[in-house]
Length: 201
Length: 201
DNA sequence: GCGTTGACATGATGATTATCATACAACCGC
DNA sequence: GCGGTTGTATGATAATCATCATGTCAACGC
Image (cartoon, rainbow over all chains, first blue to last red; front, side, top):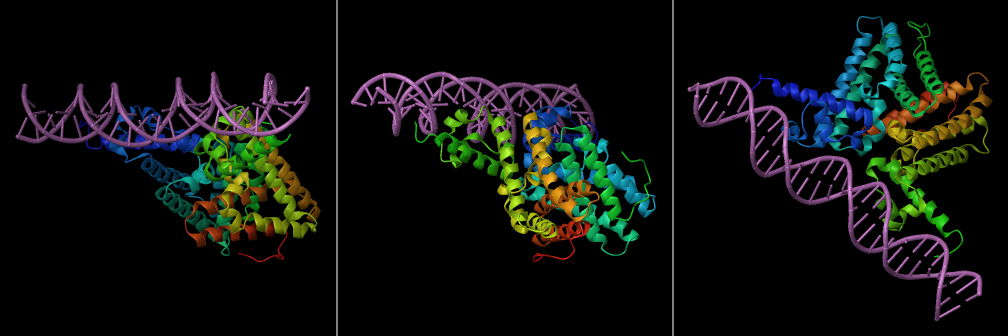
């Protein structure tokens, strides 16, 4: 039709959001084009008016996820002193609510294991997104302790993503929460954030 | 036939090894029953004489992977003093050779992201395998520093698995190696292993 | 108001897949 | 050497899926 000028654009955004959620929630190979379109309130036929292929959708969805992740980082850190900002971000990342909402969670924890099987363009977007996130983290760390900020940021993110993924593998709820709490304490202590700024758990 | 008494058993082991490799290398959803059987030198028809279903195969393959991982832990630690043993294991885990051999690598790094999508039995085996590995690690850590051994072991494994997975996502070889080296240093320092026992890389 | 256009729907196609029924072939005890 | 057992092969079935050709219908320019 000609609905508005930007109708198609908004539809595309809806499809992307749906795809990003489904892919993080169930894995690329378990997500079908028809299902994504249905989630956006459409049928499968129009898909190829928006994306060249499923691989193309995956690539764009990965960018979308990292935009999301970066926005979340900003939301948790902006307007706070470095120590407070870092503390807040770590707590949010390793929170049970983040663990339980896989569909909207950090792509590092949800997809990194499957990434080597993805097409080159998707991998490139993923790498870019990771670099951006680490750089932002490192910038904050640098304000705390001038030395080693990059190294600390990579290490912290590796542990956070690893712990989040691990916490999702175990069925025992107590064990799962313990993994999160444990890494929260460890990452904090490594970054010199030992005074807590919000509740534990 | 009646080849030997244990012919079927050995065939089953071959199928399992093949499945474990394929699943770690490409992800469950990209591995077909026929392909696994072909890898073991058979055709797809006989599959159901060995396994009830593909899910059953997955479950057994996960146990197989953790047996592998545990054996690798023993190989790298047995007959060494605790500090040396830990150092050696960390180096091996975060080595480029481990990164590059996904098909035979640690299931934590390869599969944890996809685990929430797997059937309950497979998840249970995964959890058991993880507990066993962490317990073994913690036992070593305890010999080094009585305090906090469990917590340190979980944290170390989370960072190691996370870093390994991360190192596999980036296309830039230098960056990838840097991630490994960086986490190697971080984990070591956390465990008080700052005297290196083998070369870096 | 009429035709054009662009967004989406319907339905088909071919590929891949897990699963299973059945056939075969080798080896045992006899 | 024969019959029965057992491990594997052949082939079929039904489901799922990405992709695409074609149809429909609303709104806008004229």
